[in-house]
Amino acid sequence: MPGPALARPSAICISRAMTITIRPARFPAETDSVRHLFRLYAEGLGLDLGFQDFEAELAALPGKYAPPAGATLLAERSDGLVLGCVAMRPHDGPTCEMKRLFLRPEARGLGLGHKLAQAIIQSARDVGYRRMVLDTLATMQGALAVYRGLGFQPIPPYYHNPLEGVVFMALDLAPAYQRTVMRPSRTGA
Image 1 (cartoon, rainbow, N blue to C red):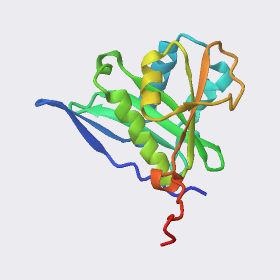
Image 2 (image 1 turned 120 degrees about the vertical axis):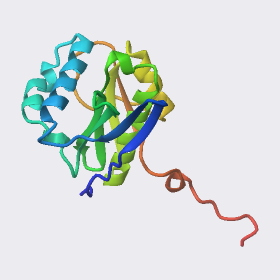
Image 3 (image 1 turned 45 degrees about the vertical axis):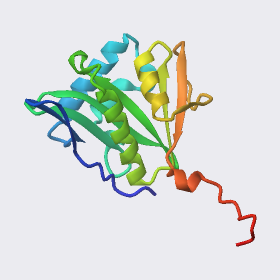
């Protein structure tokens, strides 16, 4: 069973006057803010997410995104405006799923999506997950570039998604030294 999420706030300076902090959402105090961001995410897709029980997900927040097995991270500007979010939830045993990576339009192009994805990946490692999966759309080229840049690889579908152009991806969360096969020395030493 995964342990508690140890997501640590991290600050990104985008100008002398503006800093963005990535931090865990505070439930129940920020439930409405997270719900609003998730709705903006869905509206931006322009698709019906009913097949994912999206309305039930919103009504039950934090739901599966609650610690210790889940997490919801927010990107907050130093003036208090929340610019974006990302979440993870348990999927199957040692596997979690990244969900709802979203940035307001004014926050795009700053590398913040990459930072949010890195932060949720670290949260998953801190909890003890060994693998992270996600799905996205082939038309979301910016998101695909972020995921590929972080090492996500295409995989077969891990659940039924009726939408066209869905790309399923996974990332091995084990540290590189654990993935390296140790070979015996040829000298016998």
